[in-house]
Amino acid sequence: MKLLIADDEHIIREGLREGIAWSEFGIEEVYGAENGVEALELYRAHEPEIVITDIRMPGIDGLELSRQIRAISDRTRIIVLSGYSDFQYAKQAIGFGVSEYELKPVKIKSLTALVDRLKDAVLEEKRIEEELREAESLRKRLSEEKVERMPHRHPTIAMAIAYMQEHYAQDLTAELLASHVDISPNYFSHLFKKETGVTFSEFSNKIRIAEAKKLLAGSNLMAYSIMEMVGFTNYKYFIQVFKKLEGVSPSEYRRSGGDS
Image (cartoon, rainbow, N blue to C red; front, side, top):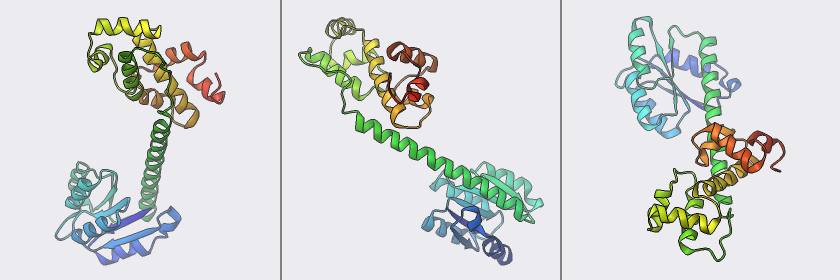
């Protein structure tokens, strides 16, 4: 975790940078800038997750610095330091994506608690992003496994099923699939049921539940998140369909280790 401190007052800047044992709060690297221009250069070079900036500095002030940082990244946590006379100015900074503001004179205990809280938020955000990346990687890896085999199936329906298996997370409709295979919706629905023995909607649900089972067994994602990832929009309906096809709820399926 990296921290950037920008303040044109040397004593304050170096006091905060050197006078606090930042490593005890999980901060490995701390950079200091005496004005907004230098701060922006350091930010671009090192991409710190947390920035502490005085609101009044020559050249680029804290408000403009916050605006430019936010234009680069919407994930950086920004703390503005403000004197009492700058209170309204600090409130404006919130509109530029500033996470928090701290009144001067700075209280070390308050500031370190604030940094510690923002650090935890950054770590949680990174953890969630990593889980989502792993889930997406798992989904792609498993997507090659076909939910349904298609020997001797009508080529139009085989094409439709291949499309469904690739785009199950989207809003699939009979009209959309009929357009994809270039036949009328009514004929598509008739031919689909004739070839598969089930309706388009039932088949679509089978594909989505099969993908949901893979994510339940292979990730720690919440069932609600998995529901959205596989194309359902209503949680109650997702539970209902899952129980109908698998005989258990998603949570029961996960607790059983993926055996239903």
